[in-house]
Amino acid sequence: MLYEEIGAQEITLLLLDRMFGRCKLPTEDILSIAVPAAWHGFAHVVEDLLNKGLDCNAQNEENNTSLIEAARLDQEEVIKVLLGHSAYPGLRSNQNLSPLAEAVEIGACKAAELLLKKGLQLNTIEEAERLLTAAVTECVGQVVERILEEWMIGLDLKNNFLFWSVLSGEEEGIVRILLKSNADPNYYTTIEVEGWAKGRRPLDIAIEIHNRAKAQGSLAGWGQSKPCK
Image 1 (cartoon, rainbow, N blue to C red):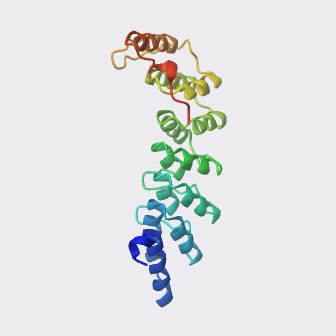
Image 2: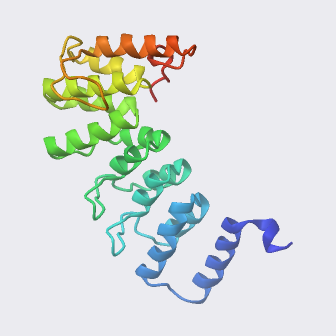
Image 3: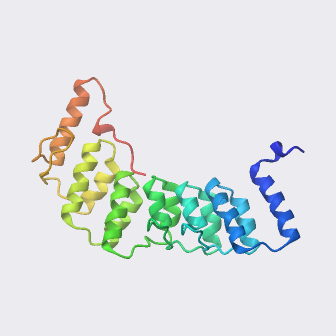
């Protein structure tokens, strides 16, 4: 059978078997294979390396673990393998981002859902606010809800997120979560954004966006927003 018919992941497994059959590879060599494998979603390769002695929490020169790389690319199967081998989801990259934070930053909802089962992995209110900002922006509703349940987020910040979510016209699920957490729909913004005058309430903005869309003969406004992830 030609290599092209086997596939890249299977080729990698064949080569690994030959390499390990000849000598014991240093840890850094194993890690140099594992991190790219996780990035590309090669779950079978990652599992094979773990079975051959890879430390699931090993970090490369950039402090990245295989779990961080998998989270960055929403590699669900790799994440399952690593968590099944007790990979620790609290390790940080050089950017001080956990695997969950990496997943949320790119809106990787499947990865976020898996990692969220292991907790938010937050140490400070500043980390919580940063993760909340990313989760609202990327519409990762389950993370938004969990942060608002577990951390004392200030009302002003909730109100600002409510304003932005309504203004975006695409985040009805986030709006519902923020209202549930007591964000104030009568909050008057104190800033001017993208031509919108300050002193407007989220409700005023929602109505105007809807009316603009209707005037243009379109129902693509806030009233038909996408569901929260």
